[in-house]
Amino acid sequence: MDIASALVLVLRQTGEQLAYLTPLLLVASVVSAAIQVLVPSRVVSRVMGGGLRSIVLSSVLGLAIPLCSCTVLPIASGLRRSGASLAPIATFVVSAPAISPVSIALSIAILGPRFTALYVATAIASSIAVGLAVRAVGAGSSLRLGPLASDAHCHHCHHAIHSSMRKLSRARAFALALAHTLGDVVPWIALGLAVANAIALLLPSVASRFLEFPMGVLVALAIAAPLYICSVGAIPMVHALLAKGMCVGGAIVMLILGPATNASSMITMIRILGARRGATYIATLMATTLAIAFGIDLALRA
Image (cartoon, rainbow, N blue to C red):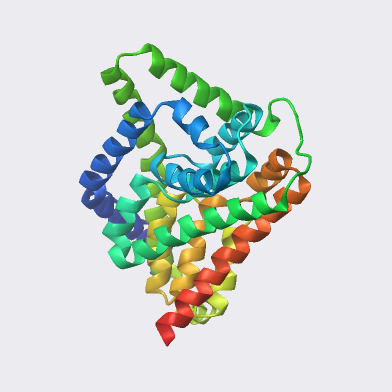
């Protein structure tokens, strides 16, 4: 197959899949927008009080509030400057990008409810483990700095959106939130579907041996840890990789670490949490996710 024919086939399949997923995306985006409008920002700050209860609630709150790693970092920085405890912040920074109402709905549709249950449980467990580890490190100095240059634009956009929403009626605020949610989600899903179709079409079968357990888990770690992969965009890509032979644990690692970590976010979290707690945050997130991924694959092979 020549390149032009392959491109046409990929685009056609992507269009058909987007048409199939559109009703689901609309429903999930409506839920997401409603959460953004109805959950006051002061609730988020109140949850971040410290202690085990705050860590668990921060994990659940991250699941409910749709944020990408672009917007969660300036929020984390603002929460820190407002006096929020570091452990719940670390938990929230993991769970918010990794899972959302839209990614859960999309995962159920594409990957099935059983896989989605493993995905959500791993994200919650990893985020809580990170919070507990950061809390266990104990007292230490974190950096007190002005606005982070790397997230200044995102923070400005996030603040502008929510300031506008406060000035609007609830109906108009909902429409604005829905428009922003669809604008954030749909392009990533389209890109993810296109990449997934290209993988399915072009990835040689000989490469599948690198996707099998245990190598597949380590390959997923090497790809997902330094690069940003949007949670909704990662789902169709993971589906294609599973079809090519990737182990379930590797797929879980891609879905958790892809959205929750990248080089920029790890550096920023070290800046927010301090060097020792930042290193603990990164090491615990990777170790917990890998341990769960290996456990899943070993259980499936038992």
